[in-house]
Length: 128
Ligand SMILES: [Zn+2]
Image 1: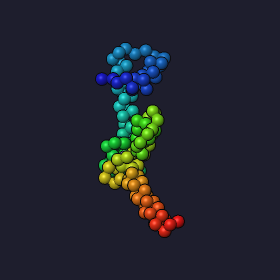
Image 2: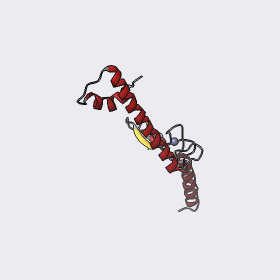
Image 3: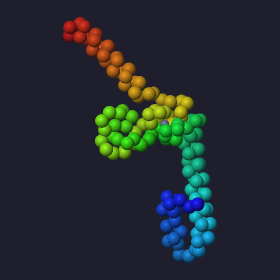
Image 4: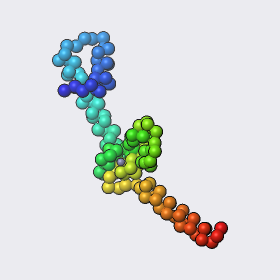
């Protein structure tokens, strides 16, 4: 089975070649391209996992640490524009590893808000 994305990516090189192929030859060559492409993808992913120290890739971002959100609000939530936006992954928080997540920015934001509230309370209770 030949998928459309790979035909778009590699098929034009085969079609634009100076030699002509019948359907069977095209499929053999295309399969070789596909196998090569998949091997490169796997090697790149393995390297990324090794480089970032990822043992169990995040299921949301596949180990990238970033993901596409449906609005400009990204992980922050709330009101956002109508545009798909790349942002830090809100499951692994950028680590790419589902078991070794980095700082949860939502928790950090809530802590900061609490600290600010305490500080505000201290200041206002002194009558400043
Ligand atoms: Zn992730």
